[in-house]
Length: 270
View (cartoon, helix red, strand yellow):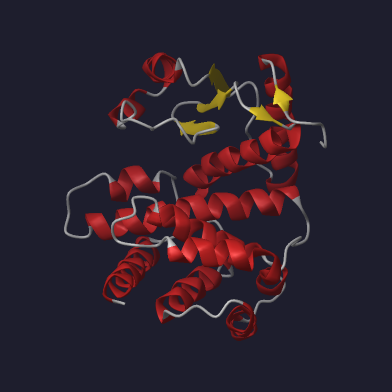
């Protein structure tokens, strides 16, 4: 998939999506298909109307989201849903290559796969994050970081049988993202997720089962100034190597959230 970027029609996007489903099923033995997935297409002009219609018909719980907030759909190329069926909303007015859409669809399918398989019975967010308990802020922070990182990691695992990037390749991106992790930046959790994904899919980290070796490579190449980053990377690395890499526990997510909030505190005072 090396075509030049262009505006794809809905038939082209559907074909790319079904190809991504087939690839995902072949690698991880999943069950996503045209028969159990509903699809909708939106543009920057009709996103809210399409979202409301799509969710009213298929995923009413998702109407709780603050989807009318300014900028909600601005950075969304596709979005995944899980209910009685699976669902994917696709933005159709982007001038993208088929490759970019294919990778994006793998990411969204990964969200669906992880939602179904991350805990026994699936649905970690609905079970643990939609509450008002003492740990609600911590566990929501931890899960927000994890869910985007694991979707990127899973999509990368499905797309390629081997790590294609090195820590040196991603050093400038990771350093830039690290500088954006600040208490007043609403995108800080997204930055943390991307850092985790970049580190975990790098050849040095993905190519070893030893955290000591992975940490040594990270410190030698990137050398973060805050030790909290290394604690986060270690707990993610160990979780990825403990059973199926997409599975989680509430304790792990709470620890991840607490360590991330400590990082934010450190960044505020330093």
